[in-house]
Amino acid sequence: PITGEDVLMYPKWKRWLKYCISIPVTLLFTFGTLFVILWVHANRDLQLARYLDQKHGDTKSNAFQLQFGLSAFGQKRPVVELDITSEVLYDPVFLFLLAGMPGILGLCLPLVNFILMRLSVLLNNFENYRTVSEYRSQLIIKVFSSRFVSHFAVAYYYSFVSIGNETAIQNGFLRVAAAVLIYSTVARWWENFLHVAFPILIEKIRRRNFNAKLSDELREIELEEEAIARLSDSGMSEEVK
Image (cartoon, rainbow, N blue to C red):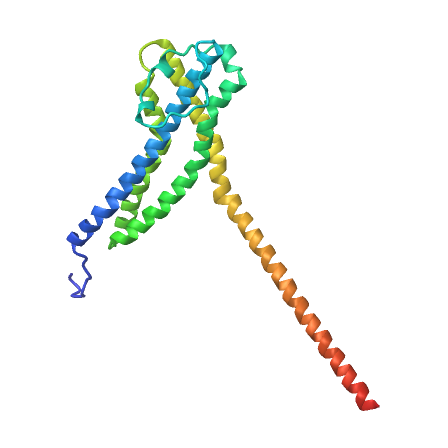
């Protein structure tokens, strides 16, 4: 530089070696989150189809059965061929199946985002950026990938699955609306609880434990002082005698 001061430089080849670790870890976490989200919604669609078939007497299979593996993905029949009427929408079992598994997923997504944030910070520290702007840019890239998957994977999934006729489009809108409602209420409230109420609760528990420990220690001190006072009183009475 113009000032003639020595500037510490970090070789690019070392950072690219670290990219060989951080990029696969980020992609693995992102695609793992995508796989879980799509698996939950695909099984939800299969459960809805099996329940309506069971209700109409077409099959006796268990509606709550889960299908593991890649065969659950991309099946259009549970979305395209279901005739969802107003009677079905008032069925509590149907509503439970519609919102049950996405609701559980909505409770897990804030925890996943929290873990991803911690992991992204660790990877950024590991990559050793020179300036704060570079550090923040790379952190945003890592976090954005998983957040994008968490918030928009469902919409893109049903935009490709629910095509063909008007019934398929209506069913797709119903599922996307249920997912948006759950993620904007259950997931958001749970995230607010984890970020606001949970730390306050932990702090209250710590203060209560600290106050209880402090009270015990003060009680022990008082007992020791009382014992010392009794010993001093007994010594003075013996001197008087």
